[in-house]
Length: 240
Image (tube, rainbow, N blue to C red; front, side, top):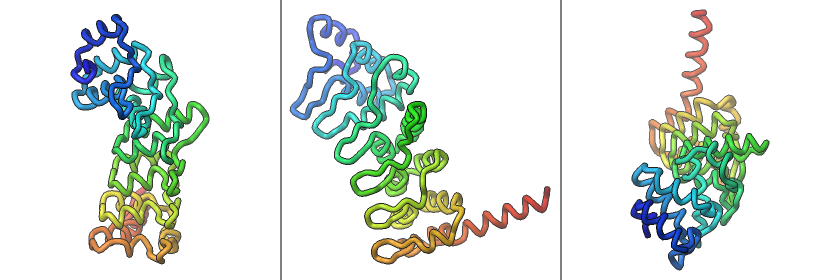
């Protein structure tokens, strides 16, 4: 496919000769816009994607794996939400197999896409930050599980609930501790305003976040960072 190779001139010629821009090229339902997004993501060259979109490609078509959701995220991350506010009608609340676009963006470490999806939702007076998948995981759960530090920070700064529990009563901190990611544990502990609440929150097997890891440095981050932050704040107040 020309959009996969980045040949925008040949692609334009084929479309002018009757080739359908929304034609599905494989048994998996992959369309030119999917291929153009992939090519753009790999090469950082937006020419082919812009060309496909100028041909009024359907940006909400779903392939057999539900990858329009990922496509929405990459489109937003690559092109920016202002482009779609002006020119396209893109669905940012599509659900496929329990996932919203913001979930897929979080899973794929697309911090910019997460931010843009949140901003787009706010413009529509709708918040996607704490939307849950079919396991009751929010985006910050998924980002913590995958150890995506920047995504976790974007979600926190956007008001994500760090105490939200999934079906197993795991908080984002439980996931970060279990997967032994010091940065995310450090981040969640740093911003935690209620250490007692964290200590009281246990999984359905009775485990606290601190008990989910064998990494001593992760345990240190979880147990002591809040104390260090309090000491630092006190010093700053005394020096004022």
